[in-house]
Amino acid sequence: MAESDSLAETRAGGNGHALFPATSVCVVGLGYIGLPTASILAGKGYQVSGVDVREDVVETVNRGEIHIEEPDLDVLVKAVVAGNRLKAIREPQPADIFIICVPTPFTADRRPDLSYVEKASRAIQPHVKPGNLIILESTSPPRTTEDVVAKYAIPDGLTPGIDVFVAHCPERVLPGRILIEAVENDRVVGGLTPACTRKARDFYQSFVTGEVLTTTAVAAELTKLVENSFRDVNIAFANELSILCDKFGVDAWEIIDLANRHPRVNILSPGPGVGGHCISVDPWFLVDAAPESTPLIRTAREVNEGKPKHVVKKVLELSARFKDPVIGCLGLTYKADVDDLRESPSLDITRELLRSSVGEVLACDPLISPEQFSEFPLHSLDEVLKRATLVVLLTDHRQFREISPTVLHEKVVVDTRGIWRCR
Ligand SMILES: NC(=O)c1ccc[n+]([C@@H]2O[C@H](COP(=O)([O-])OP(=O)(O)OC[C@H]3O[C@@H](n4cnc5c(N)ncnc54)[C@H](O)[C@@H]3O)[C@@H](O)[C@H]2O)c1
Image 1: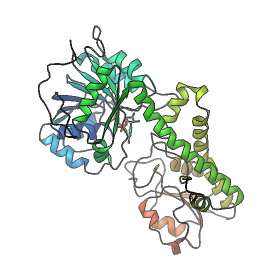
Image 2: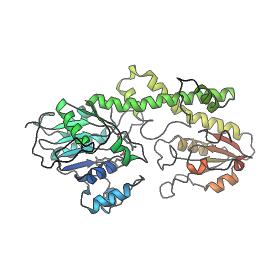
Image 3: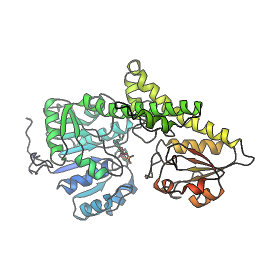
C-alpha cells in the first residue's frame, strides 16, 4: 500500500497550514500525558478512544471526570465526553492513529523498564491496519521505537514506512501547564523512515501551534533524554556547590547570586535533591545505553542522589543541640505546588529522619490529602510551626513561602530551597 491512504476527513491544522486526513485516534495510557493528549485531540474534532488498564480510570473518565490534578483538564474532559468525542475503554480498538503514553520507569538497579511499552504495543497489534500511524510519546531509551514498538505493534507482513508508519514524539510539558504546553511547545518528531516522519509531522501540525521539528526516531529519543540530562547535570553543579558551601559555613545562595553577576555565568538553585519521574529517571536511560560514554551524566545523578543524605546528616547534627528535638519537615512532594510524590527527595529525607529516632518528627504537606497518603501521619502547618524546635524546609509550596519570618525567629531552620534567606 502506498503512503497515501483512504482516511477520509480533512482537518484544519493548529498552525494554520497543516491538514491531516484522519478521523480516529486511540490513546493508550490515560495518565498525566495520555488524558490531556486524548482530550485535546477530541477537542480538535478527532474521534478518540482512550485506553487504560485501570478500571477506575476508565470509569472516572467516562463519567466526564478526572483522576489527576491538572488545571482546566476537568472542564475539557467533561465537554469532550459529553460530546461523545472521547470514550475510555480497557482494551485498544481499531483507529487511524495509535499514541502510546504509558509509563517508562526504571528498575531497582536503574535499568529502563520497557515492559509497559511492550505490553501496550502488543495490545494494539491485532488492531493495526495498513495506513495506520503509531506514535510513541513515552520518554524512552534510544531505539525503543524500533526495537519495541515496531517489533511488537506491527502485524506480520506489514512494512514500516510503506504499509504502516511509526514515529517517536517525546512530551516536554510541565505539569500544571500541560493543556497549554502540549499545544504551544515546539515538538520533535522522528520516524523510523522519512515517510513515517512526514506522516507524524502532519498529524502534530494538525493540533500543535508550536513548530514541529523533524528528525529520526533515535534522534528524537536522544533529544528528550539529553534535555533532562542537561537539567540534571546543571542542578548537580548547584547541589555540589551547596555541600561545599556548608563545609565552609557560607550561604550557597549568596555565592550563586554573586557568581551569577558574571555576564556568562548562570548557576541554578540547589535543593534537597532532584525528584519527579523525569529528570531523576531519564539520565539513567542514557547511562544504561552507553555507560562508557556517560561518566558526567552518571556522576551528576550520583551527586543529586547523594544530596538528601547530606540534608539528613545536617539535620541530625543540628538536632544534637536539643535534649528533645521536635523536627518539622515542611513539604513531601518533589516540587512546589504539586501533589506528586514520585521520586521525591523531600519524602526520602522525611522517611530517613523518622527512621533515625532522632526525636519527634512532624511531617506536613498541605498538597497531600490523607486519602492519598497513609505511610505516616501528616500534621497541620499550624501545629508544626507551634511545636517544632527545628524546621526543615523541603518543598517550597506557596503556604511555606508565605510564613512570616517572626514565626521562625526562635527556631533552628534548615532551608534546603533558599526561600527564607534575606528575611
Ligand atoms: N507527566 C509528565 O509531566 C511527563 C512529561 C514528559 C514525559 N512524560 C513521559 O510520558 C510517559 C507517561 O507518563 P505519565 O506521567 O502520563 O504516566 P502516568 O503514570 O500518569 O500514566 C500512565 C497510564 O498508563 C496506564 N497504563 C499502563 N500500562 C498500560 C497499558 N498496557 N495499556 C493501557 N494503559 C496502561 C496506567 O494505568 C496509567 O494510567 C512516561 O514515559 C513519562 O516519562 C511524562
